[in-house]
Length: 327
Image (spheres, helix red, strand yellow):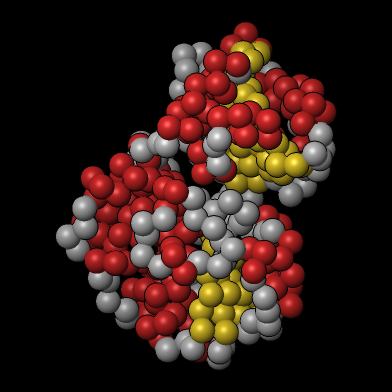
């Protein structure tokens, strides 16, 4: 059971609250932040700020237009809550605000998240999504579910379950989804926006990445690379990157897909996906202590040049595929 009572106490004792996901928040993170923000306002918390810049897939979400870009986040905050990620994955400005907050909390479901470093940690590693956990919080607080909340929560749930296709989908996931659909939301429109629709630049980017990707280990590993130069060439944004690594995984024979995205001269973000034979969260932690996520979906950011990361990563993944101990 989540300690929802303690979270409520911390919120009601606060005048200014920060809600944030990790750098480059996804559908579950954004949905959870926006839904919890509405819940806190219903409780009467005077000021609730949601950090982050939503990608084009999430710009339609109620409250997304009021999100504050990370570089404009300024403390002090009485309470800072990390949603769907951990404190090690915050951008520098948000991390500074988090570290200086009077109290801190985390609401998350990732396998690798630890409780250290928070005033309160609400972690449920069995949950399919953080949005599902927010609904549990709302129920415990006696808050009514309305169509707006239902849209936000549904967007996060379908994102983290891949439209109910991934193995984290269970009977409870469908029961929660049914509650949200009972609010009269247009689930088809939400699914199209969150999971299916792509910008033209995103289609070009995906085509280039998949065409130029490297099959390694007899085809069991597929590694794609997105350089800053390629992003600029096709006029893509970070939001266009989303979903590419998943599409790479479901090519015949591939067991693990890895996508390297250059974020700066010496910064590379890795996304790793697995069909189950390899624990990619463990692989991510092998590459750097800050890496983590789930057994089948993980990530890590490395302060290295793209060429060096591209040379180092295959060996680590191939060792994992061969059953050799990581690290």
